[in-house]
Each structure stands twice: as structure tokens, then as C-alpha cells.
Image (cartoon, rainbow, N blue to C red):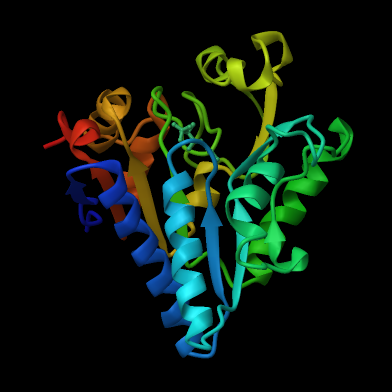
Amino acid sequence: MDPPAPQLRIFPDRAAASAAAAALLAEEVRAANARGRRAVLGLATGKTPIDVYRELVERHRRDRAAKSSWDVETFNLDEYHPIAHDHPVSFHAFMRAHLFDAIGLAPARRHLPDGTTPNADVPAAAAAYEAAIVAAGGIDVQLLGIGANGHIGFNEPGSARDSRTRRVALAESTRARVAAEFGGIDRVPTHAITMGIATILDARKIVLLAFGAEKARALRAALAPPPRPELPASFLQEHRDVVVIADEAAAARAR
Ligand code: F6R
């Protein structure tokens, strides 16, 4: 039987959509913890989830005030390669700034692909990353953004359904989009380490965020059958539990 179609939830604006996404993540954490389990979250970086993390930090603060602590372990989708952990545009730095430090997440519970791994050691490090996800019990809920070219994680167009964590070349359009943050396109890494499509689809639940008119075409293409490597986000159609949280602008072409 075909999996059910992704559930599309449309909000008037990014703020309302971000609040809904944060509520959903916080509920996953509480539900897992209430069953005596640590919650395992798959996390994304970029402009899209910034307000989600702000809301999540606020929810964590309120729960802590109510003497309810969160037991969480996190795995990020990707990291540039090579890049130093303390590079201001690294995803390590992003996560510290937007979430990890504010919720006091222990360093041992934070996992990101390592942008400092020598090229020759990447296959072993990637296999270890996959093994760490399995050892944690698998990802309960994976947060995703979507690239204007339909990428998820840094699985650029052409990525295979069975891809796993690996080193990939970034699309030129992906590099161009972050050129200003790096101080020029020449300073943007040409490669990254990313979870694969198969890694992402192993998560028990997936939350795809799409905000703004620049994502409208990609979101519409992602929801249109069939799943295809040219539009990596379309592989989400093969997952049984995908929630798309979009603002009106991103959803304009998807309905
Ligand atoms: C980030 C990631 C990427 C972004 C995507 C959208 O960890 O994996 O797939 O989610 O490039 O980026 P923004 O949110 O900046 O539009």
C-alpha cells in the first residue's frame, strides 16, 4: 500500500508556523520522556528553523521553571567540509548559538558531522555517525528545511534514494546563497558531509519546514509524484509520517 500523502499544515506567516513546529517538537520530547525514554531529535540549520529554535528555547525555559527537565539527544543533518568547529558560519556554531547553549544540552548529547575530518577518514566517520544514530535508538523526529532546488540536508539534485551519510559536492546555487555569510563565494566550502536520503527516511517522523515565496516551487515539486532523484525532497513521499509546516507564501502553489 502507498504511504499516506504528507500532511500539509499552512499558517498565515512564519511566526505562527514556527510556533507550531516548536510545539510539535516539544511534544515529541515530552512524550518520549513520559515513556521513560530519551527523545532523539534530528535537526536542521539555515534561516528557516531559527524562529523554531527560539520558540523551543522558550518552551524549554517554561518547562524548566515548572521543574520538568528534557532528556534529549540530537543529530544534525549536515556540516560544511572542511570547516572548523568555531568558524562563525559553521553549523556547529549555529547550533550552539540558536539552541544548544540556551537549553544546556550536554556536549555528549549533541552530534553533528565533523567538518574537520580529513578526507580519507570521512567514510569511516560517516559510518560511525550512522551507527551513533542507531545506537541512540533512531531519530524520533527529523526537522528539515528545503532548498530552492529541492535539496534536503545537503542531498543535492541527483542524490539516490539509498544514500547514507557521506561527503557531497554542494550545488553552485547552494554555495551562492550563502556567499554573503562567508564573505564571498570563494570562501564557501565546495563540499559538505550530510545524512543521506535513506538516513532521513529512517526517522520515525519528519517535519518539513517551508517558509517564503522562494520555496513555493520546490515545495510544489516535492509533493508531486513520483519520488525522483532530480528533486530529493520528493522522496519524502515514501515516508509514512511527514508533516509539512508551511507559511502561506511557500504553500501558494502546493494546494
Ligand atoms: C540545513 C540544511 C539545508 C537547509 C536548506 C534551506 O541544515 O540541511 O537543507 O534546510 O538549504 O536553507 P534555509 O533554511 O536557509 O532556506
